[in-house]
Amino acid sequence: LQVAARTNSREAYKAFAASTNAQNTKTTLRGQLKFKFEPARAIPIEEVEPVQAIVKRFVTGAMSLGSISQEAHETLAQAMNALGGRSNTGEGGEDPRRFLDDRRSSIKQVASGRFGVTSHYLANSDQ
Image 1 (cartoon, rainbow, N blue to C red):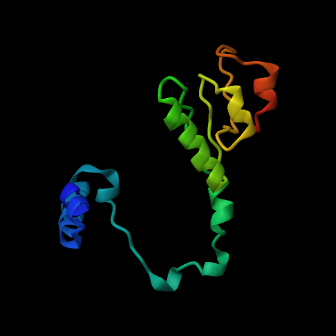
Image 2 (cartoon, rainbow, N blue to C red; image 1 turned 30 degrees about the vertical axis):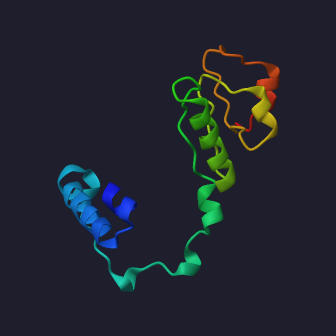
């Protein structure tokens, strides 16, 4: 992959992808599955939920600030907010300055009530 990225080589990427896919068939559950596709049984596209409805169900796991970096914690919140999903603060809470911008996690974990669980923290929660 590094060779493909450094040289912008499509052939190097194809070799990397083939090797990775071959390894996955032996080492992952997904690689063990065989899918049957029957075009006659396909769901009409009109019956498929729009992407905006699907991503609303996307939620990050509860990862405490401290178990991952502040940057990672905030980036997860920003990504989920941009998608329309929800991020979880984890037991470590979040800086109150985040309540007013796109770094805000919509799910506030309370757990044992430690780590700055205040009425202000809870009021800035959706869940």
